[in-house]
Image 1 (cartoon, rainbow, N blue to C red):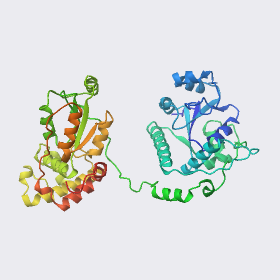
Image 2: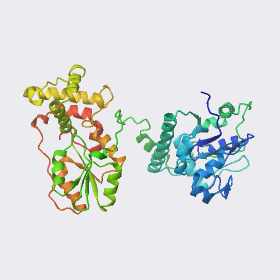
Image 3: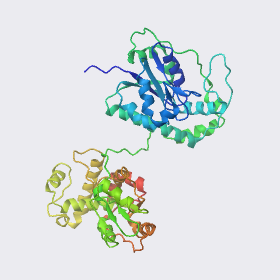
Image 4: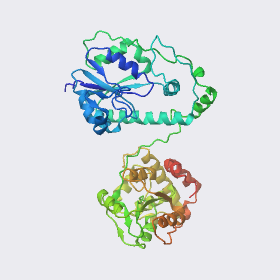
Length: 461
């Protein structure tokens, strides 16, 4: 299939990444036009401009597609710059348009941050060779820098993911590429302008602050210490190979007592205790879909939603007993023959008491491998990480409270009172003595470290 020719382009960039210089280079080419920050909520392309391609700022704000259509309908190769904080309503249309070439421009985030703070301090955003740079120093704010870096990183990851899933490629540029004629020539050729033999970078702008960072940052030592404490390579990140989970709305229970409670159960949790408590409060509605649950909530102002998470060790034991005692003989056979979990037929009672800890330890090791994507078996909801299950809930609506099982009496008492219900809350069931074992605690933590970190579970339940 012949690739679709580009009709327009977008430059995904950020403040102080060199996007002004790139725009100047493009605008020096005949039949190529870059319309500045067309979707900046505070201006229309450039400062003090009232209309762009016949579209006013008010018209753009009412319907951003009107400006997008006006830009890409121009007979020239036209485009604009788009930053992470520009009008989010137009982003999907940009990313979905395969005829809109995507140019991604990035710069060392620390250099961008310092340059941005200096520009704000001096109000000097561009510099030509006849102008004098205003000397200034800024104070590095670690929290501000971390927040800015996080926002840009999340935006770039979103763009990258959408390009990957839609089968599009981008032209990636670094700050230092913008003064390289060979790279600029390659960019214009990629855009379809193969008639151009050579493209020279714009020469009407010069670097504003070509000093070392120590001269631009007044608390340079403090900045170095703060940067050393950051983790740009995410060495402490907890990898996740689990599939994303949906909100599981059909499993929710709504009770009409007071202003209403919605229970969002985690499979493998203490539903056998919470369900009867809810049904004792009043009429219960089940089998929701997303639309019926929204209607239920609208009719009950002041409702509260909650879920109950269980310590990973007893929750894994619940999954183990359900598997051993259930009717899924084929799954038990696969665990025996492929995954080295010696589950006999006949349920947990068929395992000799002195062997149960060893069989359960083998199951915990299987869970560790399964959750790390090292088995061919799907991750069952009953043993999926609770952090992923709760993340799935949040894709519809986050619970008002995440209750720990060992604090049900205190937390559900507080939540039910907030919903106008005065009733004694349930208490957790006692734990099996088998689980008081250091080896099992270690194996559970190896399998469910994400949950231990996410919910603050202690080693011993």
